[in-house]
Image (cartoon, rainbow, N blue to C red; front, side, top):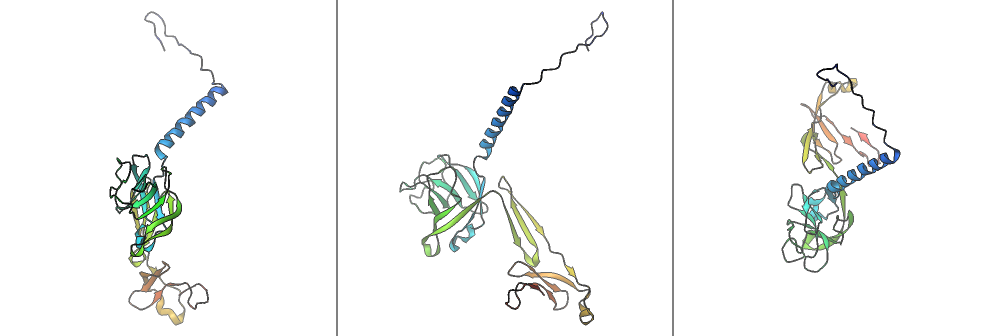
Amino acid sequence: WLKHPQAEPFAVFLPPPAAPSARSMARLIAAVAATAASMVSATDGDTWMYTLSGACDAQGDLNGMPFVKQSSTLSGAPYYKALRAEKYLYHEPDCQDGAPRWVLDAKMPDVNKTRDLDGDGNCDYIGRVDSRDTSHPPTSGAWTMLCEDGHYKQQFVVLLEGSTTTTTTLEKGATSTTTTSRNGTQSTTTKATASLTLNGACTYKRTLNGLIFDVVSTAADGSPIYKARGVEEYIYHDADCDGAGSVTTA
């Protein structure tokens, strides 16, 4: 409302804006899509984490280990650090022999160097695979890995992209679940296995009624083993009691 000092109030009405044409809407949608795509490219262009499998026994601690992106080296290649360990995954343009490769190393790469990024003057690594692709390591393939007795051997290594969830069986059958989030941080939840109370036994086994069974251990297949309080009675899963391939619960 507008009010003139010598006049009654009056209203000013403006015509509604014209509806955009189909061509204008198409251009607007295309612009928004292009902006969104550029934002995704800027933030998610590199895989943020790989989980490794396929290492030999001598490097068995690498299996299941998440490698989280830290930054980029001078060549623009991303490099990754293992969670809970000083192990690194990065692209080496030229250690000393002129061959570009992705490597697993116990030394952090120098992001300001153009060659021999770990500065040891040698081509000695935990593992390596020749590649000129600096955008990402091969997600699967044959790696040369330092294995038993200090010998290098070929290992088929898989690098799984994305997040991981690891569940570990603890004492008395409790489970600990560790989830690695998108920024590389971890959260752990622990779940205890409840005790069991038995009822419904027949007259011959009526002494079992009312017994409380607690988890005391875990079988090789990961299933819990229960023991009654105060007496030697057990509940457990037997995958094959007679070797005939049958599955039973005792």
